[in-house]
Image (tube, rainbow, N blue to C red):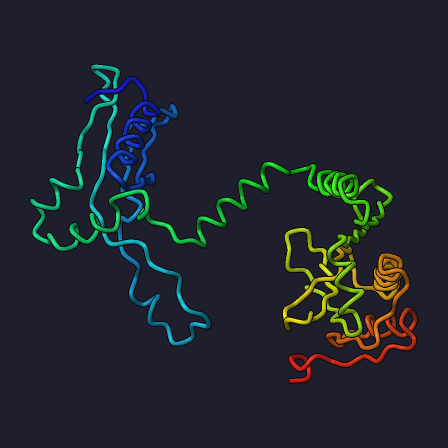
Length: 286
């Protein structure tokens, strides 16, 4: 087969792989001094094998990710033919026919069983969730704060019992954000005698701690009362959160607070919940 452009050849092989039931990744590529692609290779995404020494390291701190490669040899190679001014196929290894001709037939039978069908494409559920999240981040880039605030305003129009508050920095960025919906406020009225007050620190891409206030309901299940995102973990920031929490909960104070031991949290709780008893959670004690 011949193709006018390398992009046309790539599109063909991607459609072929999708119809056959496997996915493709780019392999070797060579360009001349003028930037023209003279040679390119596409291979199965299960091409190659993981180096065993990576799996057997004694200093490994966590379990290795699931290995999806099975040394599949399916490939398409294209080269530029100047006499025709086209790209021609120089090598084509199809999964089904090659597995029969290959001495190591079991490898390709294994690859065919794992590659065949959309339900067995070579990625894990974690890869799928990461890809979906990446797409979402690209979609909301540069407007995520505006979308979050707009969403809360819409929720409040539908449910007047939704409570939220936020601040804006001097350069027009979102500073602090606090929210609690009607279900959370009702749960606090019933189960808010003891709450857990903790922060996830900077585990998100914005490096903003997420502060959660939750408790236990009558089914011994976690009930989230309110959440907040803040740019720092200063005493004044925690006081802002707790004051909004009191306003959202009609000034009802908890009797007991479990926290993670941050001194800023303790100072803020003493000032905002002067009658509440606070304790460290067992995980931080250990």
